[in-house]
Length: 183
Image (cartoon, rainbow, N blue to C red; front, side):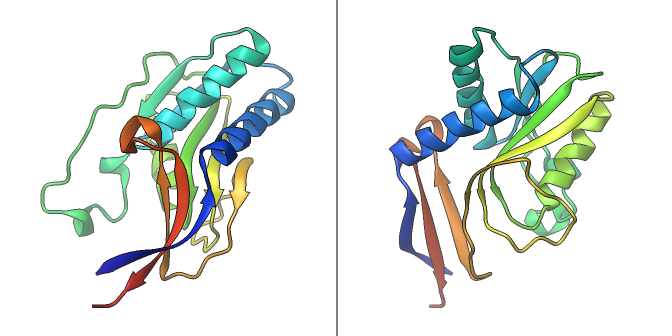
């Protein structure tokens, strides 16, 4: 399987603008930031959650706790991934009980990753509520899951892939649509 870049849908400036807007929406929806925490889904959800927390702190003057959630063992396709899936550490170093948790991910597709993340969060405690923030919603849901905060809605074909790059992991920011080329 080979991938070919098809279209860039967000550059670094557009990503920053989307995250700033999402930060304002989170504050507005929650009438401030009391009892609010952000949890990014490992890999790219972690840096995105940290960026949202930075912007919220700039706006509200309050530092929001940020955690990173590894959902590997909660996935319903675990046996399809690898014989020995690589498990990373969950880094949620605060109490989730009675908190409003904003779960952060890069792309919302089928909803299965978010379902796994909610299962992992519930194992940590009983949040007051869980909200979902995603940089890109590409559709094709298989589960009844909807994002509360969306950077960009991007209708896609199933054979397309949304590739999100973040400076912290990839050395640059951007979002592209790639298509699968059969070779």
